[in-house]
Amino acid sequence: MQRENRPCVVTEEPGVKYYCACTKSANWPYCDGSHAGSGISPYQVEIEEARKVAICGCGKSAKMPICDGAHKALH
Image (cartoon, rainbow, N blue to C red; front, side, top):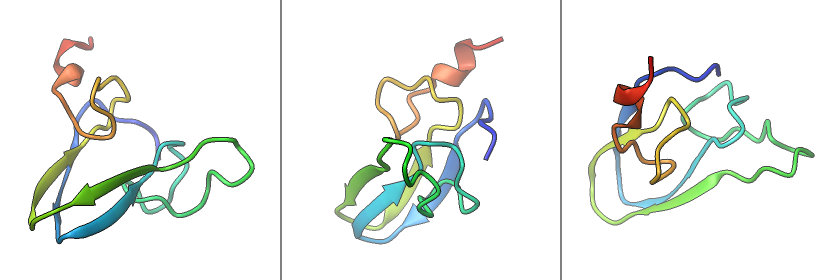
């Protein structure tokens, strides 16, 4: 998945989620194991209650993998 300058908003149910950190997942924003052998690990996030989550698409968030609006400062 090529990074985009916008978040991916998903509705999540409670549980542990694994979000892609390598940008190679065909199922972005979720990890599909494409990082194997790269030394990169997916972001593990515990979702405690059903809610919408904005996953960073630009790679610049200080709260990776959660979007913090950093994409707004990119040109």
